[in-house]
Length: 316
Image 1: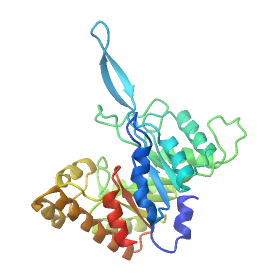
Image 2 (image 1 turned 120 degrees about the vertical axis):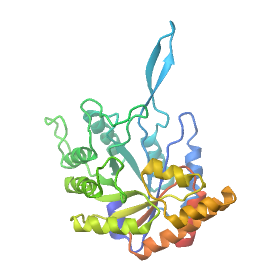
Image 3 (image 1 turned 30 degrees about the vertical axis):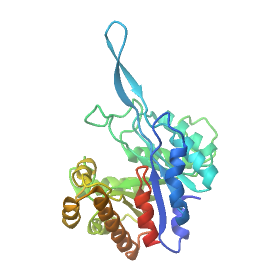
Image 4 (image 1 turned 60 degrees about the vertical axis):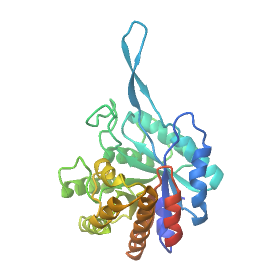
């Protein structure tokens, strides 16, 4: 079932979460171990992230260094297929611009069609770790809005080779939203215009970047509505599990940590106490979001499901 259909047919707030593919060489059992503790809460769909290539320099004979492309966490599509087969739960693969030509993107979408996967989350993706700014692959997309447009064209039966008599695809398209703006956007309102462009291009729903201040989410939602964005907006949540995250998360995700939360974490006498503070904050945050009518709570597990399980058990 498509994510948008899950939302439209729901009589209460849905539950979903996101997982990371394991490092190359690890068994898929590690994925099942992170999913199994959450099955009792009947997740409606599970997102699987995609991680683009990295570059390393390897010393070759003669002493010269060769730049080599490696992918540390492959397997997004295979994991989605395994989830659907094993759990009969809808899987949502992340599809990114980085590292793909438009033709490679089209081929990836065809693979998803053959597997019966009709949901995608369309993202630009991060820059290569060794580069300061995002650079698309030659003949690739520079922006998520263009990726959305390509998927929409496939949904109309229009492929890159216009001589092909192709059946329309039926992808449900999610995109990312940023309650505290994307770190590259010059300001909040400009970032909102970029989001509106993705919706106007044909995206079906929005999943937000993680946040810890619900007021920022509510203001973001109100701003979306005022801008004419009418699709469902799903809040993205991640429990804080370590005291050091009070400084790490703002740097990585360009977010604010509410003063009450940061004060409590900085006073924590142990990591267990810090984790408990994060869980209790997540419970209160989730309850308030549900009370205010969000269509779904989407949790970023980062491969660790215990804190999410504790929160979900209290709010569902």
